[in-house]
Length: 417
Image 1 (tube, rainbow, N blue to C red):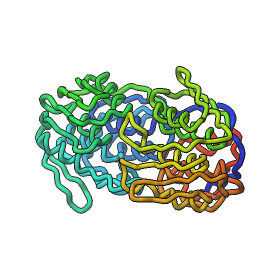
Image 2: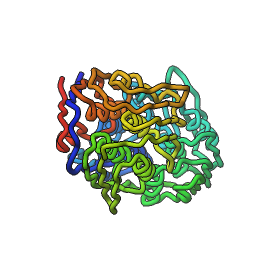
Image 3: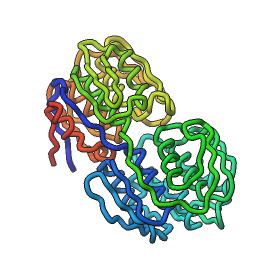
Image 4: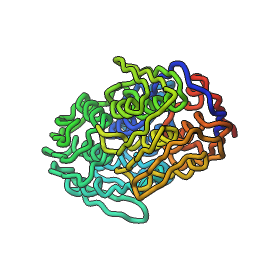
């Protein structure tokens, strides 16, 4: 199992290019099941979750004609297998996104209950309730979600809590359902908007994406998808914080600044210099950081996927900051590891109280999930001495060549077996 070794205390300097958005490409890959023919995706990030999703589509009968560089050509003409097996689905929660497309296209599905990062229960009950509202019969048996339907029908469905994957799943299913579907309290994330826009390019009739009410008029078929994946806002935010925590000077290229606006505003509040251009952001970390409070919310609020990284930054701030996690119930597992480095953090339920310290010390650390992994890397970059981070396969799920990109910015970082 690989480990990452970091010698901290070196400012990051230079230019880093952001890769395609993991959380945008996964639903697009699932959406190819709604089509028959050659789907062409460009700007695809080479991360483990994408590889897993492609393997899942292949197990369902899709053929990968090409998967070189950042371009994937995927033929779904023969994707007729309705079963998504445990060994693939168990490693990644986003694999549940095939449930809606399979029911819409084939009228049947057998999808293993999903796995992924251990940051909370994240049940798919909203997905199931929504599909049942569209006429599907859905039941659980031996760890699998089974579904059958003789043609999905339009419905009006209200999400009790905002769900990004739930919105995407039902939106895809409704694209081929008979009649009109209205999704209320829908997710507004850029990845949901992108999915709706790409489905529309393929012949779907979706309106309201980017608001909390999405309307879908079902169509009989969709043509194959052709698109380029937009830049990853979470990767961009991670490198913004990396520049700040190391007191560095980094130009982040190939990003969409308004996607990371909540992160920009929090960094500026912490007295970090952030210059925003059309498709790039320059971040220069100062000598002193002000303590800043943060509370995670669905988009356009402060993203839960940046909470751990921002907490690492606040451990070195002047004063006390409070971070509240409002999305997932178990997303403070990085706290114990940061405390091993000398951070002063106390927990009270879903709230973390961070008292800034002068410096962090290198330590042996263990990653527990994707974003926690990133937070430990950032803390190690700023710490005095050497840190060794194990279980870094979590990082590979969502970041393209993180250690190589950081090394190019001057970090003393290497991956070892």
